[in-house]
Amino acid sequence: MPPGSSPIRFVLLRPRSAENLGAAARALKNFGLSDWSWVAPSGEAEDPGPARRLAVHAGELLDAAARPASLAEAIADCAWVVGTSSRTVPGRRRLSPHQAAREAVRRAATGAVAVVFGDERSGLTNAEVQRCHALSSVPTCGEQPSLNLAQAVLLYAYEVRLARLSASPPPRAPPAAPATDADLEQLRGALLALLERGGFLVHPGRHAVRDLMTPLLRSALSRKEARLWMAALSKVARSLG
Image (tube, rainbow, N blue to C red):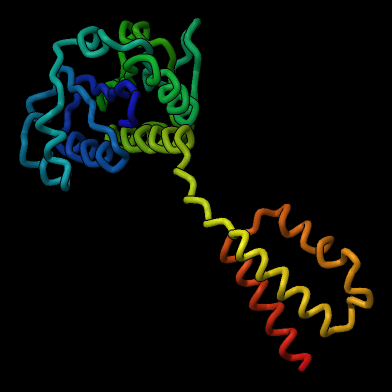
């Protein structure tokens, strides 16, 4: 979780399959998430063997999953809750997974948020949908509209990861060491020597060298760039004999 950010919690209601819990644990760890809750898992889902086989290096998330007694308990500290459901409910915004993740990351800056998933067979109940502040679903094909629970968890976890990365761009590379006055004076000397040898400075007392150096000074050359200029000018000067 990024510094200063509240949790983005994945809440799984009545999960039925231990395999789904194991695969979901792996997906959450893939994308840097660890706060999740199981509400009323079935007896089959509690079987640790299948879950651990699919968790793959995420077994600690299975052990750490919270076990609240109800959805209300699971989201009691959350300031924003989005439910994963394809239903359209008056008064509830409908968001794509991408939009839901971006809003979750934005709201997590000031409080905990939750992404809620219903059980594998019937999804969220009407009462559970009413507890959500917004709804989100994956735009699947009509021939096969439903996703496996673990697949849905992976997709939303991936979108949260992308949203966090875009909200916190990678640190910039350290700036290059700037050219020193001595470097620039050497560059000026190399430029002067080349221009004299090439016959450009008909009147050496004029300001041609100064004027040609002005844009180089204005560009704030790095030390590496100044030395590259010097090497190029010196090479050309030598080739002129």
